[in-house]
Length: 569
Image 1 (spheres, rainbow, N blue to C red):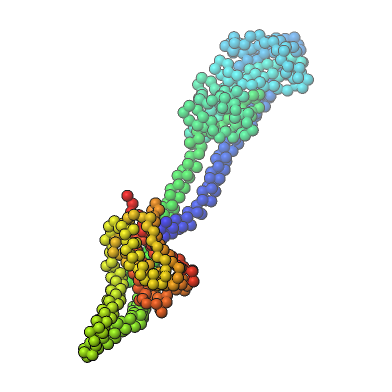
Image 2: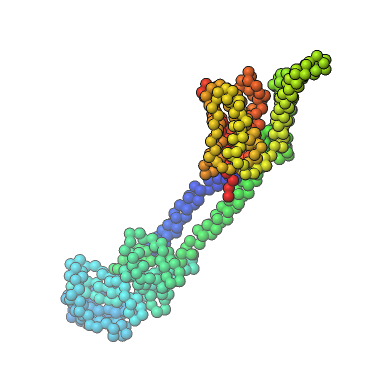
């Protein structure tokens, strides 16, 4: 993940994290607000229930004529006329009747249509009559519908032991209720315990699911949080009414009841969207402003760590302290570059001194020898036999001088990247045999056992360069081994070719092992050599894509291993 991405996400999280508890608080607030709205519906339902109770209680004084009926009954007279007068005075009364002590009808009066639908009354099996006889009170039954009108039956005990029965219409009361509105869709309903809404043919009949209303009435919560119809969803509340088995329900479309909440949600959503948008672009801008100079500094620091002191940072991308920091960084890299130039000059001088010290003696010896032999030959004092010997010595000195110069030139070619191997299929057994035959006289002179084992028939490499590597390793092994053996082996596995040179020589100390493959490094200065062979050998092997490593125990010997990767088919 880039620095810009990290900074952007960090700043965005810092800005948006406080919104999380705000959203949770708003969600809690909205739940409470919905409950408050439904509580308002519940309060209204309770008010209507109280109004209905008052309406029923008013019935008691409207039955004042019951005393006159009692007097007529005690006098043995027909109270029919009084019943009719009471009906005329109370339009809500649809029918009045007098029942004897056993609940059998004695007299009746009322609307002909109603009387035709009500047969002669005989309530002898009604369990409420004995109770009313013991505790005189007005008893009102549940709602019903008769002749398209909502009605309710009532029984009132008379002082003489008889009962006054009546059918009262609640049409006007329910009509007034249905005229009430809460908003546009909110209304008040009287509902029985089975969930059926009381309404006549001229009143609004909602398509409520009776079973859903019935389930709401049986719950402990008076708030109705969801009531579905085929088209809409309603919310509201209910309250029990003084009428047996009836409830007052206040219901309103959910979309209208929660409209203020929905509008608030839209406003809050737009507000949060605005905050999120501003936060996004603010974090983006700030991350760019902060990430650009930091990223440039990080990239420049990485370049400097790899030795590139020419990397400069544009100071215009910085701001505040970053601008000062970039200026200081650019000055530091300029100072480091100057220091690097001075250090390189010191290293070059030291290297020249090392090269001079390393090769001066070897150059001087053959040159002085050549000069001496030339002087003797020029003097004419040497005999023919001596002249032949001197010429041979001069030839050997010239070969030594040529070998030294050749190795110095090879080092220059390696450093310039000019030593490129030309790979071909190398006959490994022949190459190892050639090396062994060349060095066997030197090994036999020291009574060393020189053996070769080639378990690899052929491998891809530059034959001349590979032979030079093996020749150098075996030559070093013979040079630094005074007794024992020198063994050369070539083998392979699935991915790699191996060539090892093992000896029982003087070994290499840990301190010498650190600089073993460096230029002009010599383990023993008392042995002939220039300290360039292992450096050139490793460079040749690396040019082939391989490695050259050494393992040694001082006093016990060393093992050098050349690894060459197999080419993928």
